[in-house]
Length: 274
Image (tube, rainbow, N blue to C red; front, side, top):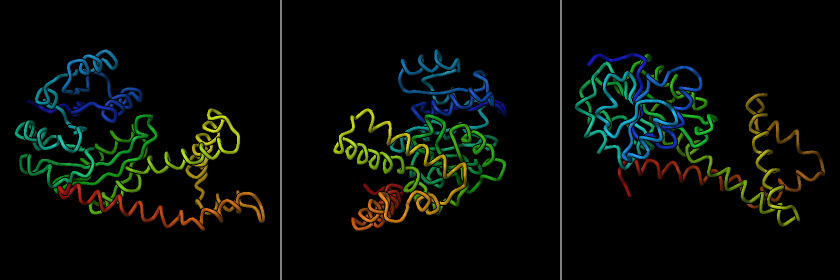
């Protein structure tokens, strides 16, 4: 079957997969007739058809037919089963984009015909509101055109950065797991607001909006975190009193150690270690 350059197949249309579909459609980069998706559950297939007007199916083999870009959006533990099913069907004029965490391109390539281009990405959960960031790397047979295709697709979930595959575990540790670090910090700050007499609703609104605004300020004004912190921290004021307590508690060192632990665990998962 000839490959349609506009056709995209999303295999395993869960939260990230559906977010990608939604981004591709809302931007106008692709139309519903350009997209196929697969799911293991009939009710999910029907939901995708009703919500997005795309072709959805229970058959991964059906979904990949003629797709220029095949997105593997299944859970890491399901990737080898999926590859065993579609591996013989993928041709060298198709590009495979995997967003399965910790799965190296070499593992994927072993299940495909020689020369099939594979691109690996690590998006994070803010992708579902199109404010994510993804690290992207090329496999052994992917050239710039293949990576650019994957990059253009993932740009509809947020920002994309190209990195060598050797640092993908670091990407996983910093941005892949990163939303949980901010959620933990938000939880602590909200609880502090309760301790100081704020309602949960008001404390939550103050914390979430402060986190959002601070992130946008650093991004849009290209401010270094140190620059922003120093702008807020006046001599003898409230902020420096708080910062001192955080430094005494070793928060900075704890964060460094936590992210390093996440990277080590990512490497273990990639190596198949439980």
